[in-house]
Every structure is written in C-alpha cells, then in structure tokens.
Length: 244
Image 1 (tube, rainbow, N blue to C red):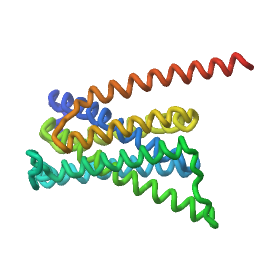
Image 2 (cartoon, rainbow, N blue to C red; image 1 turned 90 degrees about the vertical axis):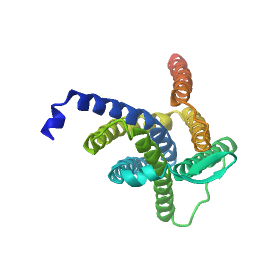
Image 3 (cartoon, rainbow, N blue to C red; image 1 turned 60 degrees about the vertical axis):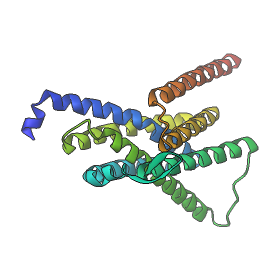
C-alpha cells in the first residue's frame, strides 16, 4: 500500500478514474433528482441518500467481481449481424426503462393527471417511497455496470478503482442535493431533465445495439440546454423582482 501511495502514476490514475466516474455519474444524478421530485421533502432526501448509497455498494461489489463482470461482455447470441452480450441486453433494458419512465412523467406533467388517492395516506406514501427506491435500484444497476466496465483497464489495482468510486460518490452526493432542490423549485427544469433522460435512454439502447454515441456529444447537448434554461430562470426571476 505504501508503494502505491508513493507512485505518481497511481495518483494520476486515481485522478483520471475519479473524474471519469463523476462524469458518468451525471446520468445517475439526473435520474435520481427527477424520480424523487414527487416525494415529500423529507422522503425525497432519504430516497436520494439511499439511491446514492446503493450506487456505491453496487460499484464496489462489481469491482470485487471483476472476472464475472468482464464475462458480461462475452457474446451470448447473434442477431441482425451483431453479437449481443449480457452487458448489451442490460443497457438495452435500462434504456427502454428510461424511455418509458421519462415518457410517462412527461405525459403526467402535460396532461396534469392526478394520482389516485388511497384511503390510508401513510400507506400511500410508503408505497410511493418503495416504488422510487425500486426504480433507483434498477437504474443504479445499469449505470454501475456501464461505469465499472468503462473503468476496467484504466487502473491495474482494485484499491485505486474503489478509492476513485468512493471519491466520485462523495462529489455526486454533494451535487445531488442542490440539483434536486433546483428541479423542485423550478418545475420547467423538470421537463428539461426528463428530456435528458430520453436522450440518455436512447444512447443506452444504441450502445447495446452496437452503435456507440460518444458521451461528449450527449453531455455537450445537456450542458447547452441546461445553460439556456438557466438563462430563462434568471430572466424570470428578474421579471418577478421588477414587479415588486
């Protein structure tokens, strides 16, 4: 361990992996921020913490099973001139889930559907909380597998990969609160976040089908759209201030 700490290449690898994990975690932050927005504030905070804790646990477990994880990239069957692996199938399934979830939330946002009221509000809240956690687990699993497979080969020591994952999760935890709060305070940004989920879902499906879309293009589109929305929010705030 002392030899690792004294090696400059190890520190460079740790920094590179940490940055990569943070960037790949953007998808996870967006999904968790959107999915918890329907919960009461206290429940939303708990769900957010549990979701990120699960993401950390999944990544560490997967790192401990690298040989099994590498096996997920082996072809399982061929169709349409493409060899499908378990990783491809997981990405396609996760992408379809994101498309369904984002479309469903957009529909409810536009149509203004009201949730059915149950006789027992506490039971309804618990059911909603459990449903959110279940959805976070599904997407955490997809993002964890994609993240760790991407990280394999960038570091020779599992200790470095685990450290990078923990550091990245600390940054994601610090960022997820403000992002969730901003989406809750500004409803229009939720629609933008849902469109991001559609984009991420399409990219996962494309990757699973063998059509890799560079993440840089996706994140640039997300950053540009978020920048435009931020200008709109600031302009709206100024107009409100001018009226008072």
